[in-house]
Image 1 (cartoon, each protein chain N blue to C red):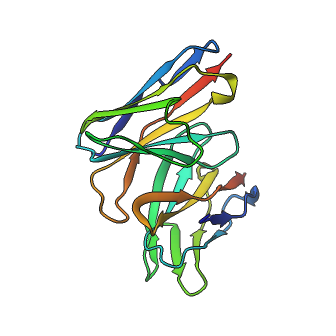
Image 2: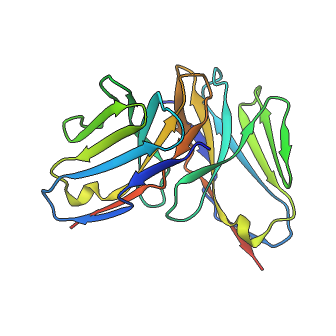
Length: 111
Length: 117
């Protein structure tokens, strides 16, 4: 079974700190990668896609390492509102439109 | 744009009843809709993939006779949980994609929380 693995956490981080999540995936043929954010009892929302060259969106930076098959998400200057579960998502290389979800990493930002 | 609605948002029912959940893409046509289930503290698990006008493709371990999916139009898919039991209590989320394009973004509905007594 293809897998996407994440550290479940929780990560308890003081406000203003930088936090990094990693995610590994097993299928080297996967081509699309995403980070989703899910608040408690809510649906997941796309945070950012992950491109081969790495990409940044404000305080968030995503990177892809194909050789090692891992994806990272860096959050700088963390805010209380960043508290959520962050889900690593990889497309199923054998079925372009299906997504394989990691179990998520819970982040708790403390004042 | 790309809004997906789900109805109802929450349902509580007695064991043995059937529950229908609707998923609608409000401002785009969804070639494909997906149904997920999420148990507490677990990740989303894909139940089935639904293409407009054809039968749904179910993931291994998901009973197609228990979870009936209908995708009659490009903007509406329904999931019916038949003869629901307490173990079916979960958070059901649908998503919609515009096309089969690889890596195409899926837009998620707000989810339906089902509690079976």
